[in-house]
Length: 301
Image (cartoon, rainbow, N blue to C red; front, side, top):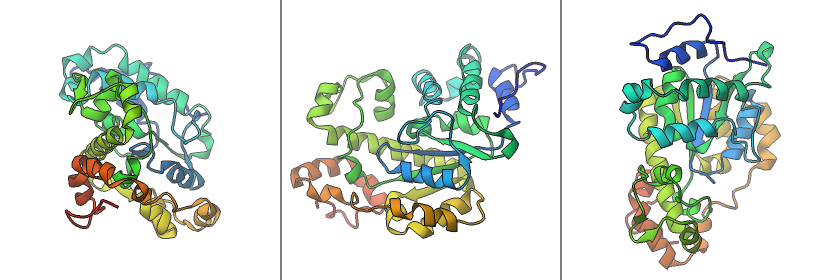
């Protein structure tokens, strides 16, 4: 068991802001490896690669290898601060009586089954971590980040969750002060009628947020494409494990290659041209920027 240090004997710094104290306590931990992505981007395979490479990804995970322990932290920070992070470092953040102890508790739970004696690398995978990267980067100044990106046209047809509460409204639209978007009601019922529209909006914002914050992380940020992970598995695994300092990827490649499939790539081609036009109306700039569209006229299947 690897414990987050006790706060006893610590002193606050930087005008008494409690987050500096928490960061000082967390310095006893190695720098984590953080994976984030839009949901349904194939990150379970990426998590399996990291775990096989020796990275501890959490004591409590779901079937997709997402950490369950950080969900509460992400929700608290997104709902209270995102996207206006100057408020976190100002008076409102300094007066947040919940956040410091929440951070301590979250990482204590996350690491409770990690063998400290083994000095393992550690980290986590959680899609929405992208939205709290300013806080995570503050707490772990040398952490490394892997952003998995998948073609938004395929993600559009992978259903997730409606933006029907304040947290998910911020994840989709960067604000919870919104009741509708382009005439669409932000309810679960409306999501079920045209989920591909909502999923596309979600993909656009997730990719833009992740890339914007990632650019500020410089050499500690790695972008990986799902399509490369499936079609050029060995080379992509070598790139990922090399990024986190694993000297050899051979064993991981051999062990996990049978799990790799590419049959879900370009599944959007089975959709109607009418649906694809609506998707492109939302996501064409990002698809072009990422190279998923070869030209303005491309992308209808």
